Length: 432
Image (cartoon, helix red, strand yellow):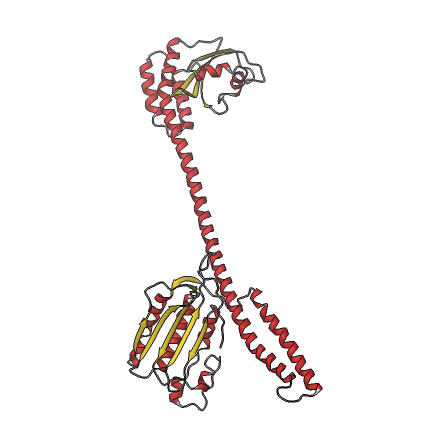
C-alpha cells in the first residue's frame, strides 16, 4: 500500500460510499475501493443477520465460523478476527492454497452490521499493520453509511408493507361498505315485501270472508228454502272459500316482492315533495290555484324508491288540479300516525267526483265513450299511483262525492335502515 496514507484512503472511501443508494451496492463499492489499493489480496464484505447469527461470507469461511461460534462473538464485541486455515477440497474451491483471513467488523451503536474479509495466501506477501489499520479506519467510516442505508431500506420495506396494508384495508372497507349497503337494502326490501304480502292477504280475506258468510247464511235458511243440490253446491263453495282464506293467512310467510324491482334508499319525503311542487307551478298557474301547505318542521325520512314516489306526487298533484275549480285552493298536509307511518293528504276545492267515476278510479282501464268533454277533463285514473304506493306497502285513498271537496291521501309504513325499527307494528293493509 505504498504512496497512500490511512487518512487519504479513508477520505476517498467515505466520499464514494456516500454516493451509494442501497446496501447491496454499498458492499460492491466497498470491496471495489479496498481492492483497488490491495491488489495482492482477496477482499469481500458480508452482512450480519442478527436473528440467525449468520455472517454472509463465502461458504468455505461460513462453515469454519459455524464450527467456531466464539469467533462471531468476538466480532460482535468489535474485535478483529484472524484465521489461519487450510480448508479441505469440499469446503473450498479446488486447488486453493492455505490462506490467512482477517475479518474486520463494522459496528453501529455497538451492534455488528457486517464484516470486511481480507484473504491472503500463507506463502505470499502478508498484510502489514498499517494496511490492516487503514481498512479498520475505512470500516469505522463506512459503518454509519451502512447503518443509514439499512435504515432507509427498513423504512422502504415498512412503507411498502404499510401501503399494501392500506390498499388491502381500502379494498376490504369498500367491499364491506358494498356488502353492508346491499344488506340494509335487502332488509328494507324484505320489510316492504312483508307489507305487500300483508296487504294482498287482507284484500283476499275481505271478499272471501263475505262470500263465505253469505253462503253460510243461505245454508242456514235465512234466504229461504234450498234443496239438497243447492246445499251441496253451497257446501263446496264454503269449503273452497275456507281453503283460499287459509292460503291468504299464510301469505305473510312467503318472501316474494314480485317481478317489479324497486331501488330503495333513504331520503326526506319533504324534500321530494318540495321538488314536485316546484315542477307543478305551471299547473297551478294555469288555473290560478293557491297551494296551502301544512307540513311540520320535522324529518319525514323514509326508505323507498325516490323516483317512483316522485311520479306518484306528480300524478296526485295533476289530479288535484283537475279536480279544483279555477281560483280555488289546494291543501297539502303531512303527518305521522300512531305507528310512525307517514300520512300525506291532498284536498282539492271543487265539485268532487261522481260515485260511478270514483268506483273505477284505481282500475287499470277506463273507457271515455259517451263522456262529455268537461267530464273527460276531470276524469282521471290513479291506478299507477295506487300500484306505486302499494309496492311500498302503503295504502291510497280517495274520498269525494258530487258537489263536495275531494281528498286524496296515502300512507307509507315506517321502514328504517338497519335492524332496529322505530315502530312495534308495521302492517298497513292495501285496499282499492
